[in-house]
Length: 226
Image (tube, rainbow, N blue to C red; front, side):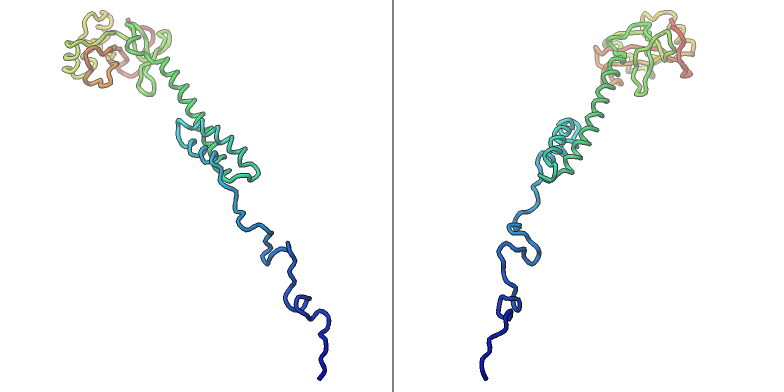
């Protein structure tokens, strides 16, 4: 038998057997050259710090600033962690606004509060929703009127701890205006006390206080009592 040369295309690497290799062509899975080891973009540390700071009350303004910076740093996927930047910005803004509102409320409340060292006999007052005595105009309906201002000495401390209620103690104070004495004895008013000491049940010598009258039926006072 004579030997015959194979027809064109039947040799190895020319269409019949294994495919030929061309440098730079995509692999079996379509991988681009150099794709191995590329990985996802790294997480942005500033954005993570914004998220952490926004969760705390005092550092919320810092979280807001870091969150804004994180939004710029993670733009177009240059870095990961954009969710942290967005969350930090939103939470930081909300907590900062809430803190500012609370601060403003505290300042207004402190300005309106009738402190023991500022109280004067005949001064009118209201009692607010947190049971604090605040300044009021005697020309408008109000909750009470100051009848005595002073500080505890040893005798007053003993007297205060011995009586059963504020009304009895205030009624026993010396040099009360006769009109306040009449109001106390009429049964139409009750006496309350405001004390600067933290422990109002056992005030220390030198603690400031004032007594005031309010309607026994809970109604507001019209005009002045004295």
